[in-house]
Amino acid sequence: MTALVVAGGFGIWALDRFGIQFVEFSMNYEPVAPLLPPDNIRPYTLVFDVNDLFARVQMEDGSWCRIIRPDLPFMMEYTIGQFEVILWNTAQNQWEGEPVMARLDPNRIATHLYRKHAAGRQMRTIKDITLLGRPIEKVIIFSSDPFSCYPLSNVINIPVWDGNPNDFALEDVSIVLELLAAETPKDVRPFVDEHSISSSIFSLFEDMDK
Image 1: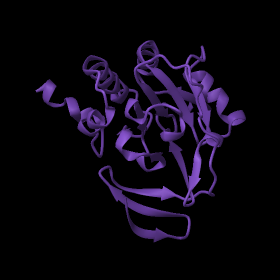
Image 2: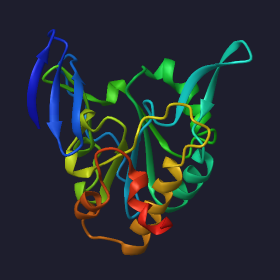
Image 3: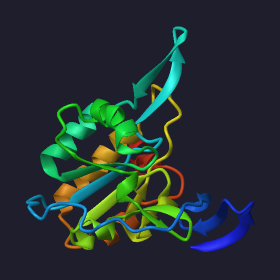
């Protein structure tokens, strides 16, 4: 990652294969590792950064309500049946974020992680999947903010959801996961590199529709 501009002491503009993004500053600290118990039997661990990815609050009929991204129930049902699933919410503390997590995962089948499980490094809040206690070559993290994740070699970028009811990003994620289950790579990082682009995972399948 290459720092381009220091902005007001609160973050930097950074450039990588995901494009240019603003990286917010945070205090330095380290969580206690490993974050997960050792009894995983699934072939791969999928980490979903829920911030701006799965849900948003918007005004409907004069009142504020939380809405869920299209295809989320289908994608969650598929992933939980095939993989170890982690939902990571660093935007909120656990007491604030648990109602959101309960809406995304009402049966609490996935593991829920929060801000306290993230690392603070160089004044940034980082979801460090090397602290999970899983082989790094078996972990993929899906995020709308790749620069909040470490290492970048394991990140698949998903665009932030703007509330569009015709959004298809999670349907495309399900297709990628079907490919992962079919190909069963020994190391997910080449797979991630093949299926990561700067703007949207959706365009991976544009050629299929032509």
